[in-house]
Structure formats: C-alpha cells, structure tokens
Image (tube, rainbow, N blue to C red; front, side, top):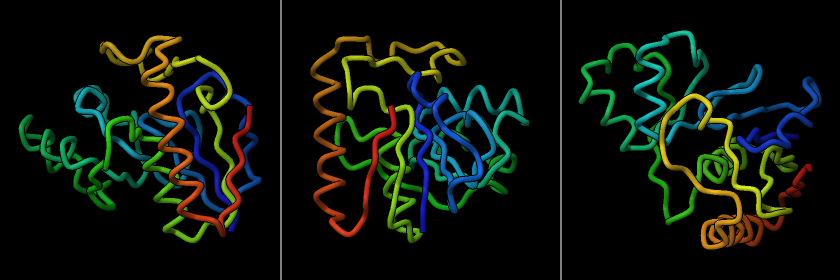
Length: 167
C-alpha cells in the first residue's frame, strides 16, 4: 500500500492528490487526508475555537487529549479520536508519529512531503501560521539533527518499507 505523510514544511506543496492509498497529515491538514496527528495543545486550543479546522480521524498525543478535558471540550473532540499516542523521544514530531501510523496501517511505500529538514536547515512549520508558539528556528541544528535521527530510526526499524522524502 502506498502512503503519504504531509508534514508542515514548505515542500509539502509538492504533494499531488490521488496518488496514494492512505494520506495522513500533521496537525492542521493542507488538503484532504484520511487522518491527522495532533501532538500540540495549542492546536487543540485553536481547533476548539474553529470546529471545522480539522474534520478527519485524529491520532492525539496523550498530552493533547488530556488538554481537551482541561478546556472542557472532550465531547467536541471524541468523534475524531482514533487513538492516543505517546511520542517516544525528544524531536519525535507529528511527522514521525504520522509515518509510524501509516506503517502500522499497512503502508509499504511512504512518500514524506514537507520534511524540509531532511534536505536542508529549514525548520519552518506552517502550523506556526495558525498558532503562537516558539517553534524551531531555521538553522537550529540541534533540533534538525534530532529530527533527522528520528527519521533514520524509523527507516532502520522498517526495512521492508520504502520511505521517500519528496523535496
């Protein structure tokens, strides 16, 4: 099964719809997706104020899911809950988690869009256009190397999955 992960970097615009069997987004999807991954409470806060922002099945981090209760909006989010996930490491982003979900859902070929840090020192995330938060600055090599290390671990742990980073 061919899958796509739509991360939040500038190269996500390279994504071509209708070429994949399973498409998963990160946070606020760029386009139509089968599911998305939300790790960040700030995304939950924005979504709670804009119920149509995300309308697909969602994998929530445990922290993000707990936040839905904290803001007393659990019932609004419950119809979207697929599963809660617990990011494993520092720098284990929504993109990494989305790739792992796609692999667990049977993808044997995975195209990763919007993961510009794989190719360069770009740390830009379109999610930051929607929420106010520090984020990772372009050129933050500690974060970029951390993300690259997590991607390499996913590649090494899944030798039967062809993972392509699309620029």
